[in-house]
Length: 213
Image (spheres, rainbow, N blue to C red):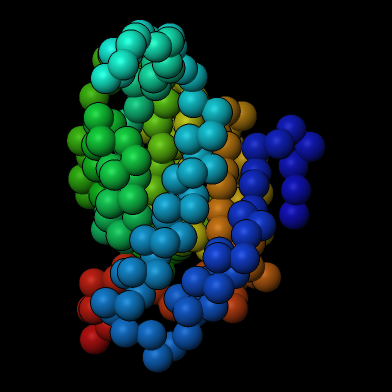
């Protein structure tokens, strides 16, 4: 699946393939699952920050002063609760000055529609860039809710980062928003009748937080 305007990117990296295989394995323990997810989140973070704007700055080295560059954008990280928290740490290590805003959304299993239960997003003074962290993009409902919330805030540059995405959800998100860009570690085959990603990796939140039962 591809878009003509370059708004969708699938990681093409040997490490992504390796750690995706480890994540998918049903015997991977929660502690290992979290570590593997962090590696993939680091790869996603590198791609997400590739085109951030810079501004000139003069730095005093131990020998002399030198013209360097520093990040110029105000950046907000938006983990979608709860599974998005599993991707957050690599981003805060690379972007320690970024603001963090939380959105709580769950999927109503009877309708497949997103239900918002928590929101810490203001309505004034939007940032330059918002990076949404949501490990699984299945139907796209949670992602669309997050993107629309950020658009209502007035954010001009929105990136959606996900570990695994289904073609159906990707297309719906891209159709509903003309400003969002999506970076995913992999695009899987399809959704099943219960709206779960195939072949997928199960429920990312349950596997991250060891709440399978």
